[in-house]
Image 1 (cartoon, helix red, strand yellow):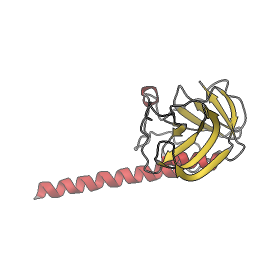
Image 2: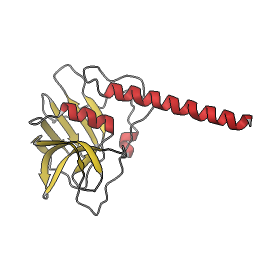
Image 3: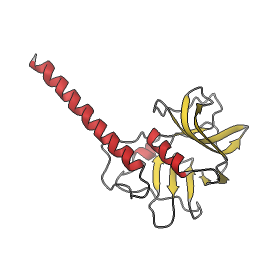
Image 4: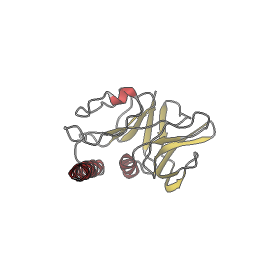
Length: 186
């Protein structure tokens, strides 16, 4: 009986630590005026690519050269990463994303529409949709699944949803309003 009780206590302790780590991450993600924490997070963000997983979380990922200047969203299809670049002097917020099956060409776009909650082209409930391009007849934009999952898209479907963690979707929603600049990099 003691073994069962200690297992339950260990499980509850681990769950409490994970919840505190997640809440701390979520709080830091919604406070863009503060620089990112230097210490690695206890709750790692989902890493959709091996190159993103190798990134040291204590070091900020530099904004790609050639992405322009001023306040903007920078999306690198190849790095599977987004940067929210604010006014000069503020460190950008950066996070990994899962690209859609339809990619916009490299270039500069403008946020043209937003939706709080909708059903994605893959049939999944999504939130904080920020659309900025149309490619091959498919609307392309950033969003987060309501269930928090970030799976790879079905390669047999034409989808334009660039998916991210819900906390990152919250940050994108607050940052990228109608008319905001989005720079797509290869």
